[in-house]
Image 1 (tube, rainbow, N blue to C red):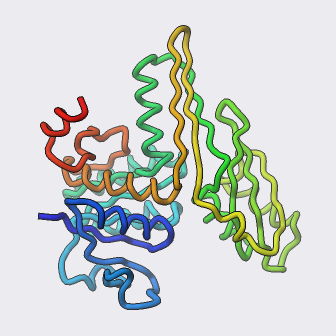
Image 2: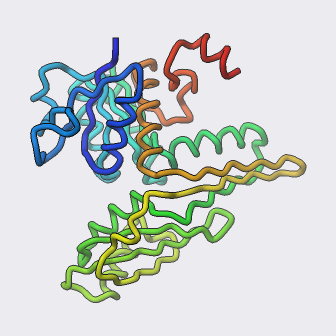
Image 3: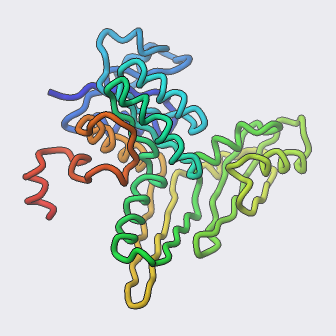
Length: 291
């Protein structure tokens, strides 16, 4: 029997999550939760304003919402007795979010998988493999060039901004620059917008450049990439990947949802999950195929 999933939010990641669910053999989407739906259905799936409106209880809620809203939203769904998966991408807050949601998930006998995206997420698994290969090795992750979904969402929320796209530019050895194309709303100067953006934790730690444009559409491209490098003595390894950012994030979340329903209650990240639990199909069949 297919497991019942709902999607919370319907931006780019939410749309790709629906596609990933529809292409799976073990999940079905029974509803989309949005604050304000433009129509009753999206791609044949009923839209609701709250999970209480659904005729049946979902097995898992896949949260496709801005990261700053994810911990609180995950807590709400866990308390309703629904497992959760998200792609929370504020790296510095991941550990404390796991520590906060773990006891809540356990209390309500549910599972939360946190930061199950591309990075953090699948890249975190690669970094962990490299660290296991050589615990003392230095590991560097360089992103881009490409559009950062999380940074773009935050940039659009900055006072004085009507629309924005944030591009990540690699500087080498894990260092990055943020280039943000901004369509201003006319209320603030470029300098004031820059200062507001630089004050946000998303942009506070990297070099920042703000470019004022009339339209950000030409810069709105989903492609992104990353290079993970590890070197220690004669041990050297690298992993390079080019992705459609929201699509890859969506597919990782669906795989994490599969694992969530196979794990004991609690809060986890991708490095906590046995990989075999993320795979569609039976364990022994996957061992035969992949090991």
